[in-house]
Length: 117
Image (cartoon, rainbow, N blue to C red; front, side):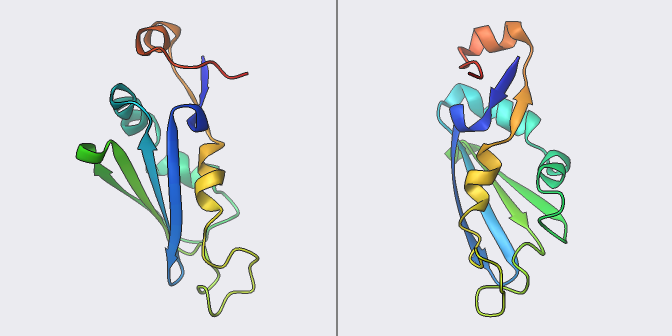
């Protein structure tokens, strides 16, 4: 079953120089493990293909039910140097929430996950 991140998490993003910072927070404690398992650096790198030039780092914050991603090379030099429309990286959180993940139907039912509409 496909599950949209926007249905199981919320996110915030910002910038530090040329790096966008995206926090992904589970809406329910029982959904954090799913995010931890499925939203990997490789998946996030693939999701933002063509938008970032550098590597993706991930930090786990289980006490907050959150993952924090650093997207290096995302801001074309940073807020004061960039000609990008979103030089502070505010849109990256919304863009990450558009990602979908595959969850086995049995696990989705057990976790009471919302289906993609």
